[in-house]
Image (cartoon, rainbow over all chains, first blue to last red; front, side, top):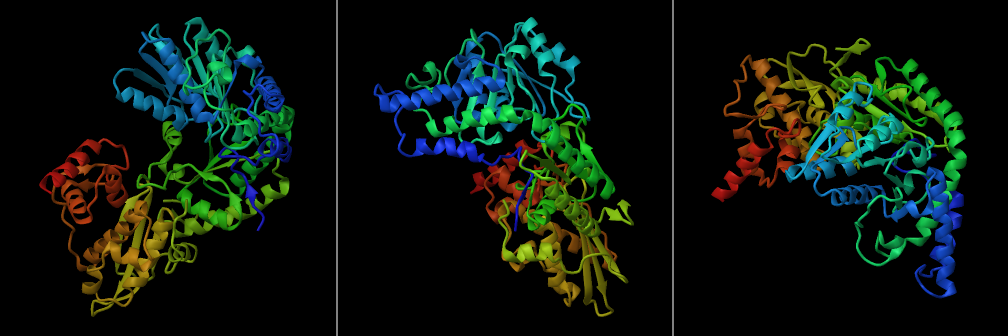
Length: 390
Length: 187
C-alpha cells in the first residue's frame, strides 16, 4: 500500500539530494574536520559551506551558527546560557502552548523555586495575549522564550513585533523556530531575535542535527563542554554527514519557500475545505490566517483521536492526533486545552501537516477516506445520534 | 505506538454488538466526554435472569472499543450472577492482554456492567464509600488503596494507568503519593 504522508510537523523525508550530499561523508570522506591534514580539512571546508547555507536560510552570519544534535538541545543550550548570562535575574517568560522541550524545562525550573516563570496565555484561536506578554516583561526577566509557530495548530506568533519590545526592555529573546523553518521566511536580522533554535529533520535533513543561532555580541556559555569545536561553544566531534545534509536541506528549503506559500498552501486549503464540507460537526483549531501554510488541525465532534488514527492507518494515511492517549492520562494536548477547545472536539482532533512532496491525488485519497471513518466511529459513539452531537 | 494484540485490533476494527439494542431492559453507563472515554452498555435479560443479548456504544481509543466489544461477547448467555463476577482482568485476558497504560479501558467495561446489573435489579449503587481523591474521574481513597495493595502499584503513573485517578487536572497527585507511601510503610 502506498503511504500518504501528512505528518511533516513530526518529521520529514530526507530529500534525495540531501542524502546524496551526505553519503560520501559516511564513506571514504570520514576525516575529522579538526585534523591538521588535508584529508580532514576537506571535511572542514564542507562544514564551512554548510554553515553558510544554514546562515543564508535565516539571514545570519556564519559565526552566529552553532551546530547541535537536535532542536531540544538547542532549546536547552539557549535557556541555560541565558540564565548563566544573567545570574541576578530570576524571572522567565514563555507561553502556555510551547513544545515540551521548552515547557517541561521551565516547569522543572519553576519547581526548584529559584525562578518565577510566567506562562502567557493564548486566546481561543491560539493567538498570544500580547498585552499580558508586554505587561509581564520586567527588569528581572532573564529570558523570553516563544515558539515562532506552533507544532499542533501551525499558529504563528508575531515574532518581529515581540522582539522589538524585548529589545527595548533589554530582555534576551529566544525563539523556537523548529516548525517555522522552511515553511515561512525567517530573517534574524530583520526580526532582531537574540537566539533561535532549528531542527534538521523537520526540513528534509536527517534526524540528530539542529542549530542554535546566537546573535553576535550575545554572551554564550556552552551546554556541552569539551573540545574547541564550534568555536568552543559546543564540544564534541561534529556529526559531519548530518551537518552537511542540513546545509543542503537549508539551501533547498530556501528555494522551496515559494512552493510552500503557493502549491502546499493550496493543497492544505483544499484538504481543509473539503473535509469541513464533507464531514458535519468538524472545525479548524487555530487562527486561519496567522498560520503555517502546511498545517491544519481539525476537530471532529464525538469521536476520539487514537481511534481515528488507527482507522486512517489502515488506509495508509499518516497524521497525528491532538490527544496523548498513549498514557493513562486521557487529557487532550496542552495546546488545545490552552485554547479552550471544547472536549467534544479536542479529543477528536487530527493534525495534517503537508510537505512539497504531497499531491492533489493524495489529498483526494484522504478526502475519500475520512468521511466514512468518522461516520463509523460516530455510529459507535454514545454522544452521537441522528446526525448530531447529543 | 500501537502495542495491541491481534485480538484487540480485531475487536476494534470489527467490533461485535455495536449500537443500541432493541428491547434492552438494562443499561449501564460510565465515563464522559471530558474524561476522554465513555461506554453505554445495553443488556437484554430474560425471565430467568440470563443475558440473552448485549450491545454497546463507546467513545474512546481502540482499546476502549475492543474492551467493550469483548465484554459483550463474554457476558452473552451468562446469568446475572455469573456476569456479576466478571472482572476487568477477564476482559483484558479475553483480548490477550492490554497495554499497562490502557488497563483502565477494561475497568470501564467492568464498571458499566455493574451499573447495568444494578439498573436491572432496581438497586441503586450507593455513593462510593471513602473519601474522594481524584475529582476528575471520581476515584476514592479506598479504591486507590485497594488497587495499590492488590496490584502492587508503585507510583502515580501506575495508579493513573489503572484507575485513571490523577490523569486529569493533577491536583490529587500529592494525595495519591501519600496513599502509595502509606501502603509501602505498612509493607
